[in-house]
Amino acid sequence: MDEQGGEAAGVLARLERIEALRAGGPAGELLDELRALVPEAEAWARAEGDARARAAVSKLREEAEGMS
Image (cartoon, rainbow, N blue to C red; front, side):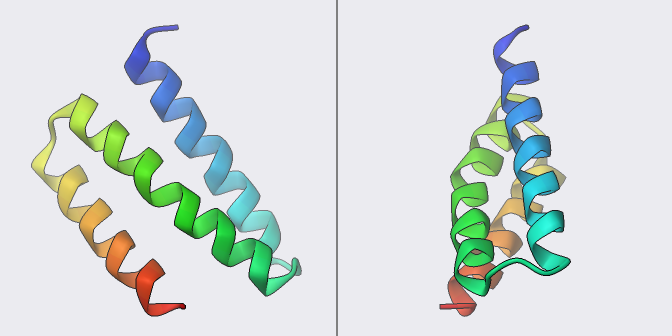
């Protein structure tokens, strides 16, 4: 698997964990997963070189920081 594929797989796996936690997991674990998602998504957006992806990550970062 190439670097981009690995980054994508990591982000998608974390999103699955987040969805499971949203369905009834502890709020602290959900917040931890969201915070961990930000740098992974940033790496993926950089690898893709997509301006829309970078904008989405920026919004995600702001929302995760607002949950503190």
